[in-house]
Length: 190
Image 1 (cartoon, rainbow, N blue to C red):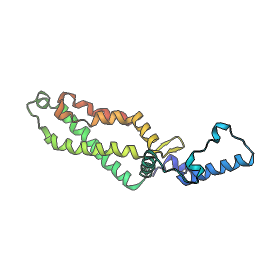
Image 2: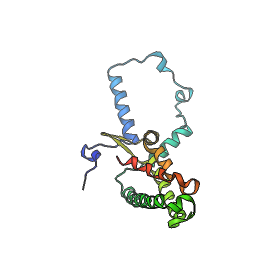
Image 3: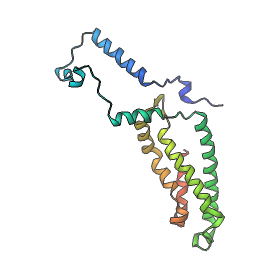
Image 4: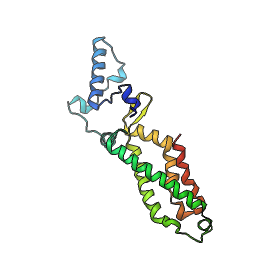
C-alpha cells in the first residue's frame, strides 16, 4: 500500500488555535525585543478601547464554517467515493465510445441507444457531486497542506474545474455530435 506524500514528510495540519498561539508567541518575541511599531499601527478602534471584542463579520464566520468542512483525501468516505467515481468514469468512457461508434445514434435514428438518458443522468449526478467535493478537499502541494477553503477552491478552479464542467454537460441531449467532449476528463489523469 502506497503511503501518501504528506504522511512521508510528517506534514502537520495546524488548527486555528495553534496558529493563534504561534502568532502570540511571535508577538511576545517582538515585545521582548522592545520593537516599537510605527504610529500608523497604533490606532485602536473604539470597540477595542472599551475592552469589547468586535463581532466577526459574515465573511469571517462563513470562512470559519467552510474551513471546518474541509476533508482530507485519505479519509475513508472520500476514498470510497473515489472508487465509485472511478467505476462511473470508466463506464462513462466505455458507453460514450460505443455511442460515438454507433452510426444510427450519430445521425439521430436511434436517440435512446443503450438507454443513454438514464445512464448519463446517473453519471452526471455523480460527477456534479465530485465537483462539489473537490472544492472541500484539502490540497497537498509539495509538502504544504492547504486547508483554507478559499485557497483550495482557487487551486481547483485554476486546475480542473473547467475540464470537469465541460465533461459533465449532457451532450447526449443537447448536441450528440459533441459527445466526444466527455473524453476531455482524461486530461486530469496525467
